[in-house]
Image 1 (cartoon, rainbow, N blue to C red):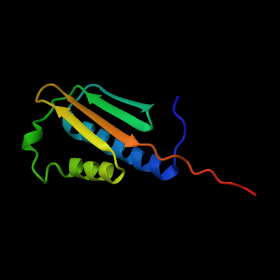
Image 2 (cartoon, rainbow, N blue to C red; image 1 turned 60 degrees about the horizontal axis):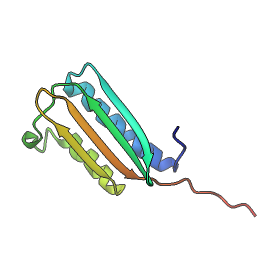
Image 3 (cartoon, rainbow, N blue to C red; image 1 turned 30 degrees about the vertical axis):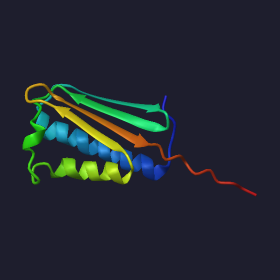
Length: 109
């Protein structure tokens, strides 16, 4: 079971996952995709795997890879790590590690 985090952190994380899933829908021709989220050692570990057509990461030019570049930039701004493993015909695996931003607790006097 996941708990709640800082609201801005949750929104940014949601937007990153949404953008990756949009890419899966637009480009992968996948029949299946799986999203998993877990918490480990102060990090949120997000994994997105699809069984689509995959792609050659070395052939992404700046225009075609703009979405991926924007996702990478967002993750770096959150001090996280972004990994993509994809091969033509073998689907794509995305892994994101984000340092958790906790909810601020208000102290009432």
